[in-house]
Image (tube, rainbow, N blue to C red; front, side, top):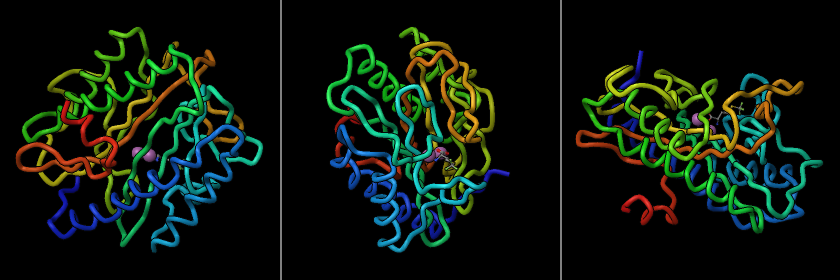
Length: 258
Ligand code: MF3
Ligand code: CO
Ligand code: CO
C-alpha cells in the first residue's frame, strides 16, 4: 500500500526534510582532503541530535553509524571510519536521513574533494541531471516508471550505467515504504503517481558497468569493476499540480529553474 499523506503529515515531512537539508548544508565546509569520514559522521550525528531528531541510519537493520559515506567506487551504504581519510581528487557521497516527530527525511549529495578529474566531474554532473530530470517527471496521472525511463535514457546517452539493485522508495513514518522507485524502466509502467505521495529519487550512476557487490562488512556496496559511481537523492512530495522537492538546498534553487 502506498500511503497518501494528510496535510498535517505533509507539514511534518517538511520539518524533517528541512532538518536533513540543513544538516547537508552544515557539513559541506568540513569536506576537505585529510578529514576522516568518521569525523563527518560525528559532526552530522551531533547536529541532528542537537536539533531534537535522530539519525535514521543508526542501528537501522544494524547499520553502525549515523550517515552513509560512499567514496569513489563505493556505490552506497559506505560506513564512516577513522581509517577512511579523504584525498584530493576523490568524490564523496554523504547520505543523511533524519527522524523528527515520527517522520523520516532523506537526501544525499556527491561532493568533490579538492580538484577532481574532468572524467569524474562529468559523471557527477550527469548524475545530478539524471536526478533532476527524473524529478521533473513527477506529476499526478504519471507513473513511477516515467522516472526510471528518463534516468536510464540520460545515463546511457553518456555511456554510463545505472545501478538496479538499489532504488528510491516511499518515505514517511517508515524509512523505506512503498513504492520502489527504480531508476530504469519504461514510461507508463508501475503505480500511478497521486497527490500526497512522498518518495525519494536517488539514481546511482556508474562510469563502468552496472554490476555491484557487497563487502564483507555486510553494508558497503561497490562497483564490481572498481570504476567510480555517483549519486544524488531528494525526497519529493506529489502536489495537485506537480511536485515539491522537500530537501531542496538553497544552492540548488536556480539549477532547478534551468
Ligand atoms: N539513506 C539510504 C537511502 O537513501 C539508506 C541507508 S540505509 C543504512 O535509502 F542503513 F545504510 F543507513
Ligand atoms: Co533513500
Ligand atoms: Co538516503
